[in-house]
Length: 158
Image 1 (tube, rainbow, N blue to C red):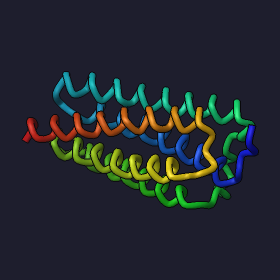
Image 2: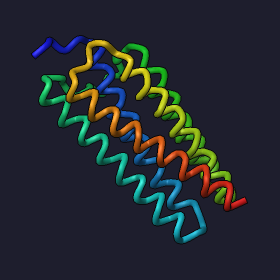
Image 3: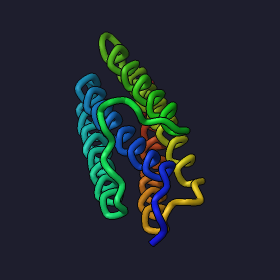
């Protein structure tokens, strides 16, 4: 098996963090919307992102990638994307208070857009083992589908 580069390790750690943040963001969105069906769907997406983080952690462990420390020393291309996702979900927290369902869904859309960019950056890595690439590609596809669904919900909630 090829050695895992620091860039690959950072990509895994950043994607794990992006999904943890997304899980929290979708949960806050579910709590903020008024439509019961949207509450259910957003809760499902929160659980999906938590599962993605778990899958990525498991994949990383199998490749010998250490879990990220909480010291904030992670550097690299995806770090900015992870920070942007976090800021997007923080914006969601403020949007939930006193906003309509469409505005909350718009913040979910933004979070997913930034997450997709981070996934695409990770997939461009030439050092990504095939099995890891497969997991990341599958999750990217599911996030894209979720983003498209959120866009449809937003359009129908105007």
